[in-house]
Image (spheres, rainbow, N blue to C red):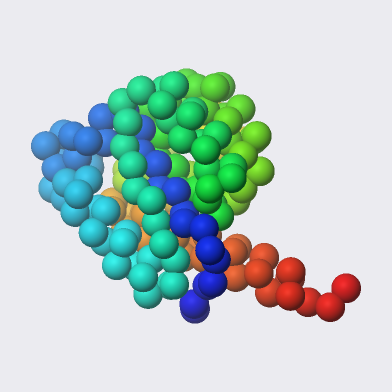
Length: 159
Ligand code: DQA
């Protein structure tokens, strides 16, 4: 598949994801976030997509980036880290963005503590990919590429 969109996909990472590779490797693996970025970038190239890859430890900054995405991005991949389970502000920003968003987690949150089973992000996401380690990101990008390809072919269809 090759998608043609002028705008990049925002790949946004929340708190503690800068610690990947060091942080609880039995849960999150040994790849760093920079390694994950390389993977996602090369996968995006194959799909014909550009990405803007970012990480923040601050809820407000994540909200600001999601607001920015509304005009500047064609879609969002979001691993909001622990904010997934706590942040109505992130949910509201995603709902306001009116873009296809995919929720991503490295770990299978449903095999973990009960507090990780609830996600505010899910309420505004088209779908969720979790439990595949860094491959969760590329699988999520495939899902988003499908949605974007459908959108562009619909917009070209005769009325
Ligand atoms: C995570 C899962 C969250 O529950 C956790 O707080 C994280 C990482 C994941 O990618 O598996 O920080 O989003």
